[in-house]
Length: 262
Ligand SMILES: [Fe+2]
Image (cartoon, rainbow, N blue to C red; front, side, top):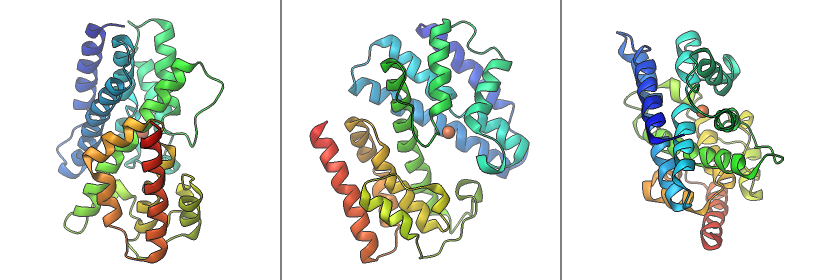
C-alpha cells in the first residue's frame, strides 16, 4: 500500500459519506458526528503511530483502519436510526460488508486487506484475541486506543452541552441521575474495564468511560488523551461523592503507573 492508495480511499470515503446527508439537520448531525469522529480517530492514529515509530507503510495501514473502522455507522443510522448495535446490528461487521460490496480495498494486497478487515472487526469487541500475528495485534490495539481517545472527546462535549441541546443519539437516552451501579465502581477499583450492560444512568456511562483507561494499550495513548483533556472533563462531570472519588483515584493511579512504565 502506498500514499496514493490512501488518498484514493479517503476520496472514496468522502463521496460515500456525502451520500448519507439529507435535508434534515437533526439527522445530518448524527452523520456529521461520525464523519468528524473518523477524522479525529485518524489523527489520533497518526500521532500514536509517530510515537511508536511505526514505518511509513504501517502508518498508512493504520490510517486506513481509522478511516473505515466506523464505516458501518452511516448505513446503520440510515437503516435503523440508531447507533445502538444491540438494537440494530454490529456496526463493525456492517462496515466490512460495505467495504466488500463496494470493492473498496480491491487495490490493496490480499494480506493488507485481511489485516485491515481484522482490525475493523475487533475494534468494538470486549477484548481482542491473543492468537493473532503480532503485526495484526498492534493494529487492533492502536485502533482501540485511538477510538477511545476520541469517544472521550465526543462525550466530554456531550456532557457539557446536553442541557442546551439534547442529543440522545450519543447517549441512547439514558436518564441523567446521580445514582450509579456498584458493579461499575467495583470494576474501576479492581482495575477492570466496566461492562456496558451495567450502565443504567448517565453517571454510569461516565464511570464506564473512565474505566476504559484499563483497556488502553500504549503509554503514548495516555499522553495524547491528556493533551486533549477530555477524560478530565468527563471526571469533572461526575457527582461529588467519596465512592466516586476513590474509583477515579484508582483510574488515575493506573494512568500514572502506565506512563511511568511506558
Ligand atoms: Fe466503532
